[in-house]
Amino acid sequence: MFVRNKSDIEKTPYFVEWGAGTSHRLLTERDAMGFTLCHTVVRAGTESLLQYRNHLEACYCIAGEGEVEDMQGNIFSIRPGDLYVLDQHDRHFLRGGKEHDLIVVSVFNPPLRGDERHNLNDPLGSAY
Image 1 (cartoon, rainbow, N blue to C red):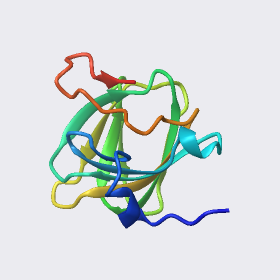
Image 2: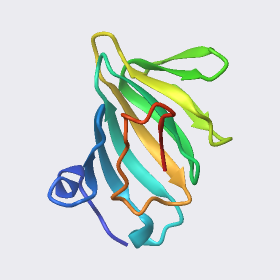
Image 3: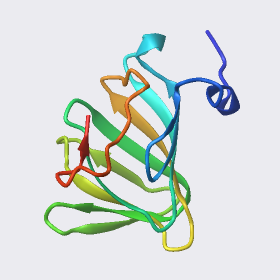
């Protein structure tokens, strides 16, 4: 058993500025739990084209607002209590709210190493 606080992560390489927000990688591959758990902030007014080619991801909104858009143009508003799931390695746009950051708890399977970074300058979208 262990206990870890979000603020402890800020002193490690597992606190990631990913270009449109931050990610506290609370559990990673090194913890041998079989998944990663993150506290992720998507800054208000940002848009990122993302795809996780090697991971499945589920995100549960705990605060703020935002939206996710699939490649067919379907836009889903995300508010506290909403879950969105990228169960097909879905390429998607992730947007922070117009006035408020989107804050989610995200779970990745298989787990992240923890030091992955997005490249938001890739016209095909950031992928890892």
